[in-house]
Length: 389
Image (cartoon, rainbow, N blue to C red; front, side, top):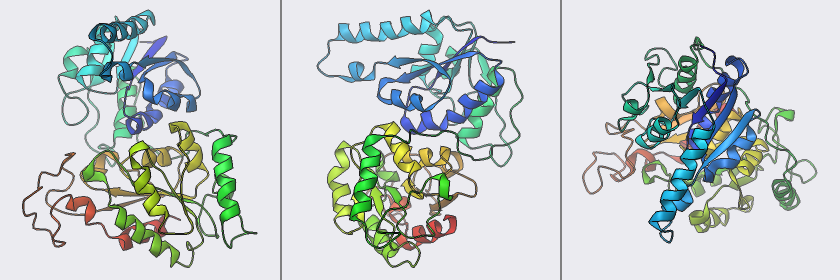
């Protein structure tokens, strides 16, 4: 069946939205010119500005719904206005990539007759989502990429439009962030003026124009020390030790390190930067500006977070630190990706709070809380980084 108006439901979070980008491009290339709209949480709306061809953004009013000062009546009105805007779209296909009850309700209330979603099971479809949709797609469970959320999302998109899914997925640069971002350009210039050594004292642009490698001095390494789970967050002291190792590396020693941060993380980011004269905290950035900064970098080091997935769709070398989340599902792959993880019996439990808190984990480090991530050694991360640059 040919569809003329398609709605993508992927409300949140930032990293998950980025991991749905390849599915969007698949739809754009294989849906016969259908108009593709996207329902997204208003907090992440600027991410869609990176995608050529999004017909319309429908913004989910999460700030209003989560506010403690907004009345129940106002929240109800905001939610219903969102649903009315979805219904006005007149879609003949809704694809629910979120797989949760909330997204299922939006899909069900859209008024669309064909509502595609993952078959129940695992992390793809939860909270009775499949009861609210009516074109249930079973994606492959075998093959080298069968567990990857990126590939599974492409397979959902393919099944939704009755197309054959691709045999695999080759990592490549999907988007080109704006290169004229004044804030990022000013920040790069500031680092360049403050840098030591290098090519005439400057930071060399790590964009694809020069291959993006770090094999010449003064190329930016961007790190993201922070995630929203303690079980995915590598300790600050380990990041400081890693930077010390970078300074002793013959190839990387002159590379500036840029530290990404959020509002609650600035003090920790500043403490990392204070430990090294060539480390800098980034300016406050929008999601789109993070893409621009990563595009100017030669490599990214991060836990399972938005920044890591941004690096993947930019095809930047990325060293990925994984604790409780499952790299088989979420980690970048390909020649530009390196995985650093442990092999504990309790590894990849997908728990935000360590289930072993206060108990003996039988871990050789003696640190049983969050051992899956805290037990990663800085030397392991440097070794992984050196393999991909």
